[in-house]
Image (cartoon, rainbow, N blue to C red):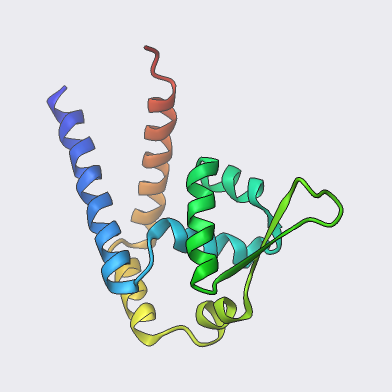
Amino acid sequence: MKKINDLLYQLHLVDQTITQLFEKQLGISLTRYQILQFLLQKSPCNQTAVQEKLQIDQAALTRHFKVLESEGYVSRKRNPINQREVLVELTQEAKNQLLVNPPRYHLNVKEQMESTLSPGEQKELTTLLTKLVSGLEKIEF
């Protein structure tokens, strides 16, 4: 039992380190960064698609969108076809910062993060984390 506790604590430390890295070095939370990356691929889309893909509860997602909107990264509007649905779209400014002219220090930090693990190690870690999440979700109380 001690080994799994140690492993879970290591995951916690990794999470803290990543959170600090993104917020202090890149100036954005990892969650908001992932939202922007998703929107790069699927924008415009409805909020539900983002919620389902990133597994974020609706209230938290709305808070993230409010921050991203106030910072000029996204725009939200009602779907003209279905007024109950909110469509989210990246602004041109966000596209410029993410694709056209990203800050050099952002690229530098991301390159360093990516080089920490080899491609094989990244694949193996992904497999193991997916297995761990799946197993933890099946735990019965």
